[in-house]
Image (cartoon, rainbow, N blue to C red; front, top):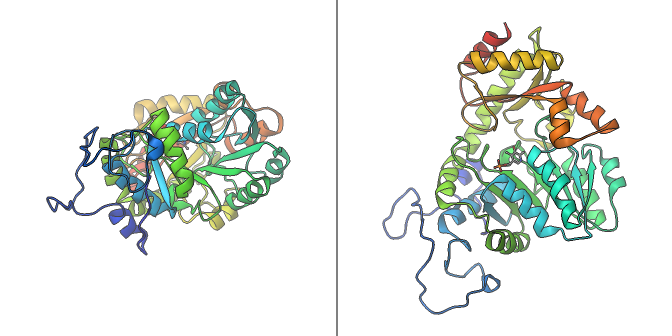
Length: 403
Ligand SMILES: *Cc1c(COP(=O)(O)O)cnc(C)c1O
């Protein structure tokens, strides 16, 4: 939880925000502060309710200098007053839901989202008496029609994992405002460089910083950016009371990754565009979904709302049987791309996601919502996170398995 300091350029911000040379040693690179407790200069209170921005560090679950530095960097990149980092993207999602919603409140959530978030909303929240509406958030009329007097929160995700469908963030913000509700948005796929979520009206900008922000596949973490007041409330409940804090070591690793985020996002976009175009021209590929392609059904919205199309794309090779067979070939024959879940790393990652299986375990969509899902994903998609390798090597790898 911390205020951001702003530089005019994103690259400078990514490198310098939240950091100062060590005042004791002059070290240019930040140290990791692992201490769980801090020596007090005078006796003070022992309740988190007494905590202010000016409070000295007291205990590691309340605040940590290394984590705070990352929070300042992310707030500056996202253009918000404050940020809180937590142990994982899921810890960030549960922090938003459980801190904002009480028994009797109503949540509108995207019918497609990160699978863990989908399952949390469908299975866990109703147990606490929270009403949950599962709505296609790319359809603003459907969202507006779902608003109830007790609607407290609208949770969106764009571009949405795994199908690459977009939601109109400014449109959702208008609906939320009119409803007197808060808007949260999981912007993990876009990263802070791909979408100005807060400027578009999002109250809680959420990221799995395991992905693009960390960028190297070696540390799990989550973040929420927003106003000082909102983030302070989240800090008290989610970090201090639920306890899902980010470890200082992970904060240090993720901060080092975040310093090159603007540079990496440009390279991810360039690589993804080259691979998407190559896939689109391949006779065995029946569909490619990448917001940067003119063929993406929401390419106009993508151009209006995104400053970088990111490195995530999906493709299909016919039906479920063809997809399953190719996935088996990929696990054995890919030499550069790793057949693995997760995304946003410097290494390219691919995973086969059959529609039927995801419907059973996570999304459970029917009727119109299932039809819409199938428009983007058919019987199943390969979700590809284009890393930072040379596009020519990635294409050679896909040539190897596609023929
Ligand atoms: C990975 C991911 C999450 C969950 O993040 P973790 O860090 O794995 O807990 C949430 N949302 C999206 C879009 C993700 O890709």
